[in-house]
Amino acid sequence: MSIEQRIEKLEYYCSLMLDMIAPEKKPFYALVIRYGLTKEEVESILRLCEQLSEQYKQQKEEGFVIFTSLFTQFANALHPNLPLAETIDALKQQQLFVPLMTEFQRLLHTLNE
Image (cartoon, rainbow, N blue to C red; front, side):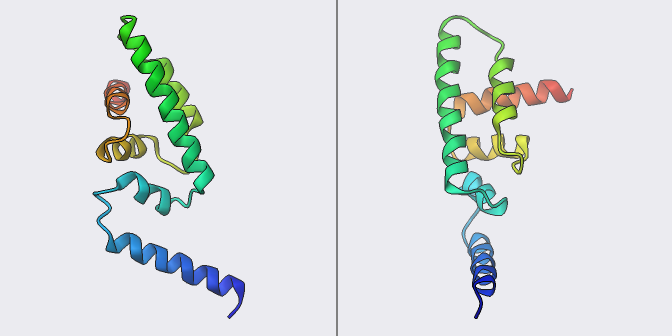
């Protein structure tokens, strides 16, 4: 069996395992697998969210009520394979960065009106 065939087989098994587990329990990780992100790319997204969450907390304490700049940073830095709204929803559903993702959902809703 060639290396290419082995890789194809592993990719196929990964897709089957994704269907076997309940993606609703870990929707962000399901997105990562579905869109083929690397460990480094995922870590970069999580670091970005951590940084933006800290900025969000600081701005909130300072009385800010508009967080469009944080949303823009997130949208611009997000991996191009990941759909913005779906990623925000998945992070929130997985209980990751909930206050920030809630704000981003609100901003998305406002922008779509």
